[in-house]
Length: 386
Image 1 (cartoon, rainbow, N blue to C red):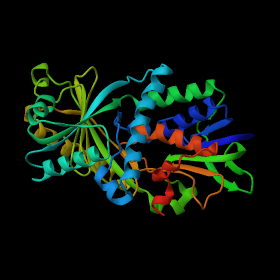
Image 2: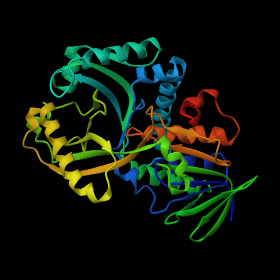
Image 3: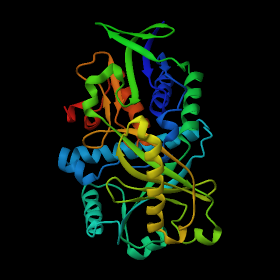
Image 4: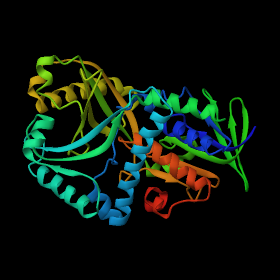
């Protein structure tokens, strides 16, 4: 079997990339070791933010204002493009547009200077010409319905079911001629001067280019593990919130994120009757400790939710789960070529807010494959951390 591009990894990033390449008329095949989107994608919280995870001021300090501004602008365009693509393809994934409201709490468990730091973050974004509005205290209380010292609102975020979105994109890619292979782990990759040879259980595949869209480096790319740290984040889904309590909680039209590091996120699901609350991130725990840790972290999240909204005290979590993601040193993903791996492109370290990053990666990787990279794409490349 010979193709132009082989994509390894069938999560949202792999499926979005397969569709982008197939739509461009490129012979592409996607290989997933298990089932499409049933790994970390299915466990994601379902929030697609219009900005990457790290603070803008931190990226500006590390890489300069121009690079930081591009990183934010590109991420926002990717969020808009991703939502538009899902709508155009009529993918049934419960896609809903939302505003993102980041806030700094006024009391425990938030730092006393959290409001000042968030205001300075907004000022840095304003000076860079980025979208976002500082919310006055009265308006902030009206939106999030809890005491807060400062808040920033941005548009163009969304929430959707990432599993259904991935399956829809894979189906659309197949309609455009892409080949989709589930339960097809790639055991080995050899690369020569002009092409790569992939060995799977069912045979061999020759490809001019190999794209690794696995989030975390697999065993085939151990040398890249130093760039990406495995992290676990946790979520709880509440039982239906009584109508008498809903008006005391954050408005359903927003995605709420606090200014802690790492942050907590809150959004409504199930026709705005239940809350998904996420956070409590930590370094990935060994398999033998996952069940015990999940129980502890789920209880912690429900306690922290009750601190944020005392009216919810006594409400139970009907489900708790964890998701593993890759985190780079600066919080931005690594997308593009690596000097030590000819014929390869990578999309690794998408972070906890990586759903928009999946669509960003699909565009950057397509430009790179076509030999038309944007110089500004370098802020998402390996060169910034090597």
